[in-house]
Image 1 (cartoon, one colour):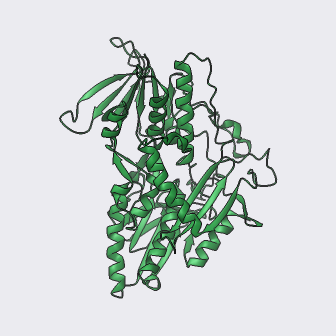
Image 2 (cartoon, one colour):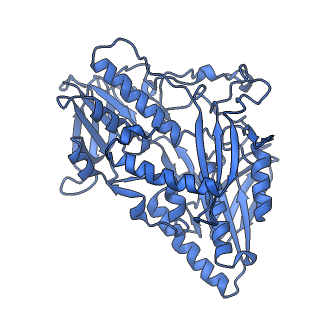
Image 3 (tube, helix red, strand yellow):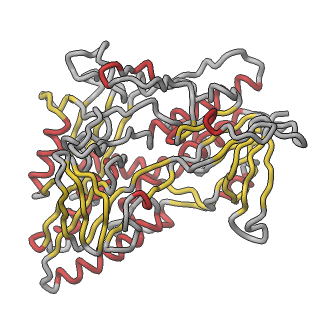
Length: 484
């Protein structure tokens, strides 16, 4: 019998748990540890943030589902890692702390044979002074509760605008090294459409602010894509969309301080500027959770497991941008020091950024961090689960591999909600990390597999995917036929 412990119940953790439980016999235990009681389909948070969906449409409680599917569940958070056990406990374990119920505050050691770290990122609002969701007129859509709060504030502003108030809305990134520009991009387009739907668009100035060097960077250094019969850069496509909707933009901006209705930022030119607003939604920096690890003698071995996020089979050698390669990226997400520990999705430490790093004249890094959300999170979680299953079944070696350097991703960015007036920006990218050796003439991506479309069909597809992935996450009949 093997015991597989999964830390986190987001996309990666939940996908891994589902596949492990489906493919392993009941003699093997699958245990999920998460501080959250609900599963949430994060891509639909933007619709909660404009009042077009309620929270209960994008989430469901984990405990009843896991009980039904014979997956053990503890609502707790991990505090320390002990991959060698200790003098008393010979087995590897993690120390957890319960966060709810009668056991709240209780500490427990959870042993494991295999460990999947799917804790994702810490939403590091504290890295930007004053960027606390719901304060200083600044909000977030990173969680369903944040998104609900954002909608209440936006709705209040819309009602004031209906009474004649002029407003300025600021949406984008809230730190010089934020990632997840895609979520902010979706949100600004949805907010802009809602303003039109409420007949107050002429009352508002809508501004995009981001740490991107160019529009459409999205932490992937932008893409060259097929667009109908044409070829265009993602920067050109996003510029076209923004100009069509009257959205202004500020680029190369490292937001460093938020006051009541004022965002302070540094530019790549080294200037310090500020932008006022009546409502802001700014994506925070993502960071590791600051976990500590100890060996059997209780000596600190954190550097063997973590470099902010968890170390995996990547090449972390420090080298100049010109020497970065797709071969630097991991394929199995296995920790090199402890072979029974894996970290799919956002939990793994990337070897470097994807976008070219840029530093202001003051020495401040103002450049997007690499995205690993959505589709890559699900794919990497499934391959980790499959490798663990193979190992338990006696196979030698890890045969399931998938690098972001040879993996494609499809993103359907909502550009406005509505069955007849909605819109979506559909972009596929292959590979996620550009391979300049294979595709030297097309900015490291393969045309035909890297393309973009804009239109109503994109909204229908985005909505269909919402229901399909909620169905999949609930492990309804034949859920595994829906791809990651």
